[in-house]
Amino acid sequence: MKKLWVFFGLVFLCPSGPSVAEDGNQVKEPTFQVPYRLTQTQHILVRAKINGKGPFNFIIDTGAPALFVATAVAQKLGVEPDPDMWGVFDRFEIEGGVVLPKTRGRIETPFQLEGMNGLGLAGAELHGIIGYNLLAKFRLEFDFTKDKMNWTQLKYEPPPPQGLGGKGTASGGLDALGSIMKFMGALIGKRAEPALNYRGFLGVELADVDGGVEIKAVLANSPADKAGFKAGDRISHCQDKAVASQAVLLQLVSAVRAGQTARFKITRDASAQEIRVKLGEGL
Amino acid sequence: MARRIFLASVSTAFLAATLAGTGGWSTAFGTEVDKPIPEKVPFELLKTMHMAIQIKINGKGPYRVIFDTGAPVMLLNTKVARESGVLGKNAKPSLFSIWGNMGQVKIKDLEIAGLKVEDVPVIVLDHPTVELLNKFLGPIEGIIGFPFFARYRMTLDYQARELTFVANGFEPPDAMQNLTKMVMALADENPKPITLAPAAQWGMMLAKEKDDVKPGISIKEVLPESAAAQAGVKPGDRMLTLDGRWTDTLADAFLASEKVKPGTAARVVIQRAGKEIEITVKPRSGL
Image (cartoon, rainbow over all chains, first blue to last red; front, side, top):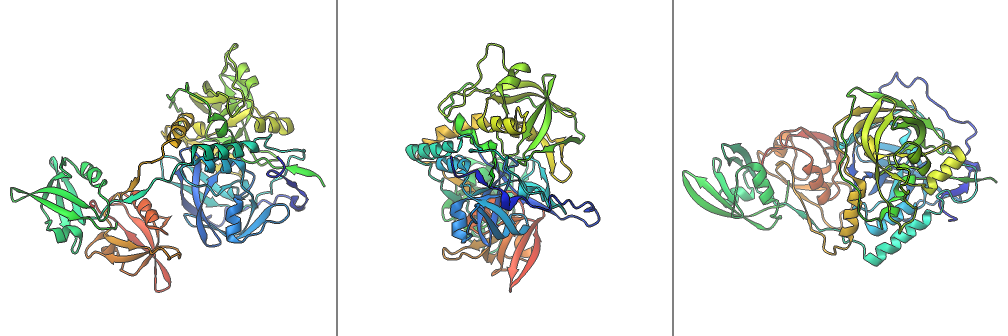
């Protein structure tokens, strides 16, 4: 109840009031392409480095009045909250090139994050929320058919958030939910992070040709080169399954990790042969 | 000293409330989107810095609601849900309770300025945070979130106090259904491993030692004649970003490479001899 959303507002009621740059159109405002991902919970997640550490995961949320950085993260960074639970982050960098010096944010772990992290709901650990005081410095473009957002930096100093002036807890007792979710998470057992595998590297350039896949080129010194693949070879099978197209081949090879052996059947000069090759690790 | 209240993120909160909810929500999404031209929607910035907009439901209204990018579902209070016919006369609203059941109904016609959408899923709920906002800054009747705005390319401009929408054909997945799946998956102790696979062939081998905490990843080998080699990437380079994404770990680099299709030009930022240089690589079809 007590803690999270209540604080003393005096420090914060900036006497100068909102200052709006009226003539920001003269200079071209920089636009950043910010990679994001949509979590399983339909939250927009971006990554940020704070004071060179990280990356940390943040949710883009206009429902939050400010930047929130989880207490544990601030501790790790050595940023101390003031008595009103605000902190200043010397360098706040968002993936895609946005760099903000001396950024103010709340140092606390909103119950929503605690809850979602407790259950592993978002599919990634969440370290904070990016809200109004930071978002308002940009014109933001959201488009879920693309894999990046556009953030255009405005010449605009947003007015600071103000409180409601009332008493009690703003979340209406909801902060208890965070703890409940965390508790449930403990009961159910937090979902283990799925292991990450890397598909192996072969070293062949491919082309789709009538009903099959042809090797256009073999990179020198690659696993494919060492195993004897040649340009012009037709790949007919991979892992004992027929290969009709590059898409099928990529799908079949995706099961073979770096360091594992893949089996191919190829046709060269009208004769079939099998090639086994240990895949490398690379792009 | 006056006590001040800050409302944060009304959004993620009620996910909790859905945890115990069982079944019943429908999956079909109306994808009717009318106008392909940009539609401007002015918003009001409340004292709490929430955005408020005006909506019409089934021709009734206007109603004042919060617009929230952090809300994976939409909310409407009981009063307006009944008035606008979203909730039938005899239907019972959802109870706000973490253990309670919570259903999703549909708004048949939702209008926001010149935008009209049909069959938008909404939860009818007197949510405590929304009630509180309503009490202090009301009327506030609900929350517009992801199920609406995901259908558009949306621009948010606090300075101009304006939202701009252009239909983009995206069909938002159902948050409630996803959540049900996720809760089921929580019981799964052995999640399936995820395989990261580059979408195209670059021709470079990467290495990151365990005790290496510096930004980026080392390029230990560049295959001759490969896309990376032709673009000028050299062994010993430190790759900081690939296609605008940080590459501080092998997983990061692979994830970034999953997004770059063969033949597209991708920016790679390299650190070489203390300098940062940008190289454009066109990875090829292959593996």
